[in-house]
Image 1 (tube, rainbow, N blue to C red):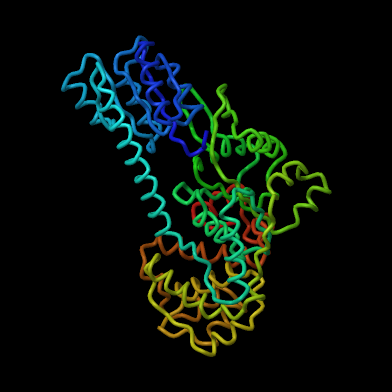
Image 2 (cartoon, one colour):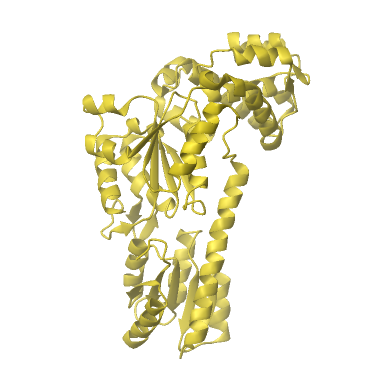
Length: 453
């Protein structure tokens, strides 16, 4: 059956009703799972990840209203739930709706009404997911900037790859925009309406890795991991070479079977997710050194796509400068500044060791710490040559001085850490040493400031 076929869970303690509803729904082309009580319903919901649940109110162990309340509390993104009851009452219907149920059906069931409500609930859920995806796209620009032949060629390759489910390994220097190109692939694929979940693998402490990726079950509660959160979408694994050996083995098993066990769980969880990954160093070298599993390397590397360095399309630098000025004005409410022609020409010929990320961070520093509408060549050279401290000293009233203390500190810390991150070549270990911060604390700081590794 097609992986996109809606999955429905029918929960009812009456076997005749369970079978009847199951047969009707299967005849309509749906995938159906069944449960006869709340305990079995919890297990089925965990393993089958339904798109819709038909839930009876009166059951022998835990009633449907209590179960719905439990699910809503643990999962804000719960799929639509249609309540059923043979002892229907206005109070029960109102309570179920208040808790978030999509609708309420009385027994004996009208089969025509059942199918109509199921269809509407699935349509409403699809629109909700689609709108969430659109909101996500509004906050994240997924169109790579630039009109050079290099960028056009890469985008064309991605559009063709998007028509297939092959796992893509993005290879490129630190800061070239591998995540952005992965988003572009997702946006043009059949998974576009699903979530795009990105993670910097190197930022996850090995002891937390299994829970982060596969989730956990504890005391009857479910904590979904990255694979579940990316269900029906794309999971992007940045700097995949930093994954510990145990997680490599578990991920290999999950990708081969499209299922996995949560930490502490006993029921297999099935997911439909496209996994793409990225590396700035050759994974084949890590394979030869015994630090990365060869079988996982081949599984993730069905297609390799090299993302070019900014030096290879320097003609796009002016467009990128303009784009990021507009980006920070819109998203961070910074005052507009523009680069002079002399500054743009200089930056077109700059080496850009940190690629597009270095350019973005430079624009952000100049907009936060500089004054005046025009960004002249001398200010650019000063920023590139001596960093944040000299920009602060050379500006009588830096823009961030007008912010509340916490926001000003966050702006400065982000600019400061990104500056040193570029200088240390994207190494967290070297960054920790350069800024004098313990690595675990540094990971938390990078995450809180939304600094991508």
